Length: 226
Image (cartoon, rainbow, N blue to C red; front, side, top):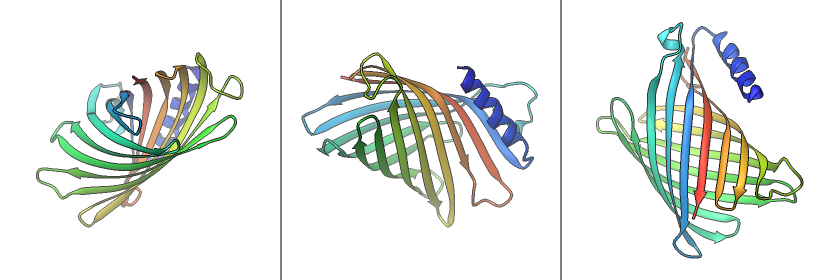
């Protein structure tokens, strides 16, 4: 926990150096429930929510709570092998201004070694607005998982999860890039229950002139399988 707090302070100090940059900090809880329909097909339901505590654009001297968004997601997936899975999904986003609908398609590929796992995820999604053009995004995520107690991950042990995701987005004639880096400490209770706590650091507005945004989320997640 002390290391997480130190990382928050370091990243916050770094982003505050650029006066034109925007820095946001808050909490990011998420939870998911997965279950099998058959040997090949499975369903996942997920809810995640962002709660802002600080926004440099508001020039607050004190922390101020603000609900940023809540996403409700459902996926149906087909496993082609122990290492390859394809999913299609739907997301309903609740946020101030306008709630939106999103369709999602993704391919997940798993690599296993003697003491670590590496996952590749290629995803495309389309977000639909009432009075705005379609937002299209293409995403690639690389995620590694390393056991912290021995060469294999056994029930009751901890693990380290590190991921980085690059996102390209385009809406009408305007495009942008976003990068998401996350590091978490995981608690593997058994095959059906996992808990993670860590930091999720996001940067975007790379292609917007004289503008750049940093978002740092303290993230907690619970993942349940039936």
